[in-house]
Image (cartoon, rainbow, N blue to C red; front, side, top):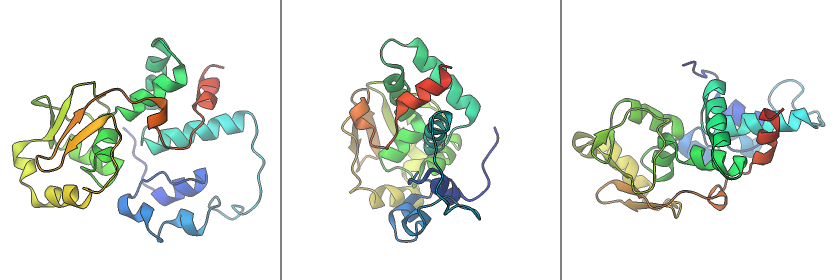
Length: 208
């Protein structure tokens, strides 16, 4: 899969919102979005009126970049959400929230979603006693997520977990900080998604 190798902070400035791609840097004064909330480039400070297709595209790009997905991956997720019963936009957000790399980040077992993907592909996590090394794996209600025995004793990983003990965890996930264990209590709802996105614009874009 192709990887984005340029500045991640540049993506946040393009979307004019924090995408939390750089871990702790995103919550400090060093975050470029705090200092320069306008697009990068020579003409970044010019006012641009975005309407219609442009708005839909920006919402899709923002959501795709927030979860760290390629265009092909994102399109596949939308098609799966489209086949489910219910509201398409809500189905899409629920599936994106339940991606394993996103869950690992939400519970504080990694610095960022990209860091979570690295840990997952290196085989540090188990789900219900099964080794899972696919970041896009979608967790289900009742799943137990834990570090494998060797990883749970790794000092660097233990330090990451300890530094995030005060992190606010969504209500649909329960975390045991001492055992470095997380359990999926329920499926996330639209209200659980705090990222500012108008998902109906994404649905409109793909429904053309």
